[in-house]
Structures are given as C-alpha cells and as structure tokens.
Amino acid sequence: MRTQQGLTLPELLIGAALIGVLAGLAIPAVKGVIEQTKARTVSDRFEAELAFARSEAVLRRRQVVVCRTRDFERCLDWGAWSAGAMTFEDRNYDRDLSPGETVLRVQQEKDFNGLHMVGNANRPVIGFRPDGRSAGSSTTLRICAKSLAALRLLVINTGGRTRTTPAGRDTPACGSDWKANGA
Image (cartoon, rainbow, N blue to C red):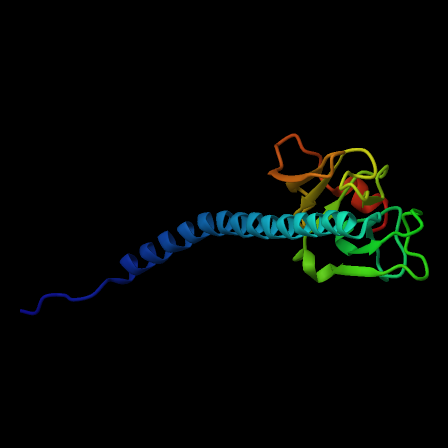
C-alpha cells in the first residue's frame, strides 16, 4: 500500500486563502511605510533647499528667496509648493524674480515624488536675509499623501532655522488649500 504524498485540494485552497488574507493585511501597511519614506525624502530635500538658500543669503550678503512657481520665471502667490519651486537671489527685495536676478536652483514637480506640499496662504515665499534670518513670520509646510492626508511638517522659524517632524493626528489635510488654490 502506498502512502499519500502531497496536499489535497481542500488543503491547498485553505493555504491559498490564508496567504490571501495575510497579503491583504500586509499591503496597506507596506503602502503606509512607502508613503512615509517618500514624505521623509521630500521633507529632507526641501529642508536642504532652505538651508542652501539661507547659506547663500549669508554668503552673497543679499536676500535669497525660495518661492512656488510653475514656469521658473515668476513666483506664485498661491498653490502647492510641490508644483515647482525655485531659489533665487533677490537683489531688489521685491520677493519675485526680476530681470538680472540669478536663479540658483529649481525643484520640479517630479522631485516631490507624487506628494503634495502646501503652506500658509499668508506666506507665499520663504526669504532669507543677509544675516540668515527668515524674511517673514514663522511658517509650516505640510507634506501630504495623494489622499491629501498630512504626513510630515516642515517648520521654518523667524531665525531662519528649519526642522521636520511627523504630522500629528490633528494636523489639517492638504485638501483645503491645495484644491481651493488650483494647484
């Protein structure tokens, strides 16, 4: 008499069902980790851009501005920072790119990894004075997932220093300022 080797059809079906259930539980968690990693990358990159702007302001002894843009020729007063941003030397202190002013670096929409970054409507540009201080009030930029849920915060204080932190449960989503401003 031969002994049975292998699995029966019911055993295979139960095993496949268990694998499906476990995969169904793991995929959302993995997506969350991937989104958080993307958000950290975007916040670290933009924090480095702000540090660059600040150091250039001190080095050049002129105001340096980081602003939202779509065409890299003029600053926008509204919309998502993730549509594009440019850093330039603001010689005439008008907080907009003027003829003769040098664009130092740009960040294109693709550099934001499909995430959204928005800020306060009352702070359309982030400028740094020749002494490295911020040329304006403190502000917070929110980095959000495609679902517009806030993932990370990038805080710029009046001294010109920046820091990043994970978004809390009570952090507003990006939807209101992202959709309303047509970004």
